[in-house]
Image (cartoon, rainbow, N blue to C red; front, side, top):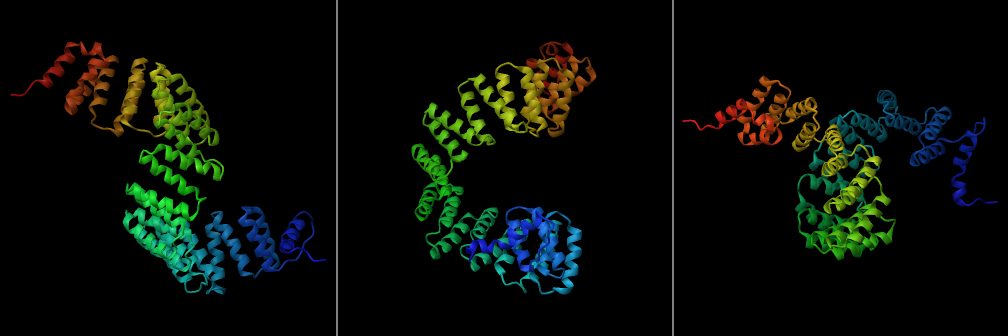
Length: 466
């Protein structure tokens, strides 16, 4: 009885997995072990790949490729010194093996020694049968060094070896973009398209370059050519929709985005953009419907939650806006954009303690805008938390030194805390930095503003010199 070819090909794998379930030990040749290990690596089963490598080396202790698999796994697990030691042993026996140089370079790259990694990869080129693979690795090392000219050169060599290497093509265009060479990128893509006129990826990249250059009509034409080349190319429909939005052709943009919904599972990006287009067209009901679908599709997409929240904010429906932003915070409590809106909405609702908490979380998450520090300070003043307000302003002053708005607030707070010497110091600082902001004393600290000593200091500073 003959087994079907695919069953025959899977026999070593089935045999190996059967062996793992028993105490039996079966023999495999080294190539069979290589196939088994490769299968597990491709399917992300690292523990099984390690078992296969261990058993393989027990049966074939001199097998170079099995040793290289072990080294590759050690590098993956960041056991760099052990891997390097094994490579040194292997190098003595295998000085013409490209993989030895590649894995050595991999270790150096992990240690951020990209220049030495490149030197080793250039040596690997002398022994490899697959130059394109090594060119790609050299290109990536130059990318790590942000040497985009050299990176571009090596990725171009990859594409010369294989015109369908779209990963190399994307990297080439990325290098052009990093160098700000959009027109040069278009010229390169046009040369490529002269040889490959129906390459949807190249047309898509041409469109993106024109979009960055704000030449929306040419971008639109390029995306249309990408769609002609492959009418199921979702990326081209999405980019075309973005261009149509910029041209304020919202109905056509909706049509382009909607096509993607029928080609594959709906993307949250397409649902969000359709909602935005409907909002621009004044169709509030459909806008809200698509925003809701967006967050149902991807609850982690902050732009979806922000779109719904802002939808209600614009209409001054603060309770609804608060409801949605609280749902968003429940899903991702580390998102600074959520907390900024949470603070602003609670401020509008006169929930001052909640608003202060929102601004505090915003600062804790690294949003150090001056307005955030000042608004939180003003809320703390309103809540009678004067010492907390002072601490808040001292932190703000580290980021915004010699700032009059901070100094006048500190002056008022120290007067409230009956620390007049400190108060006068900050009042004079504020007047020196920008006297126009002395109105802060009048508006936030009216009782302080009435003090004759304060009025004298302000008047003295404002008195024109003879």
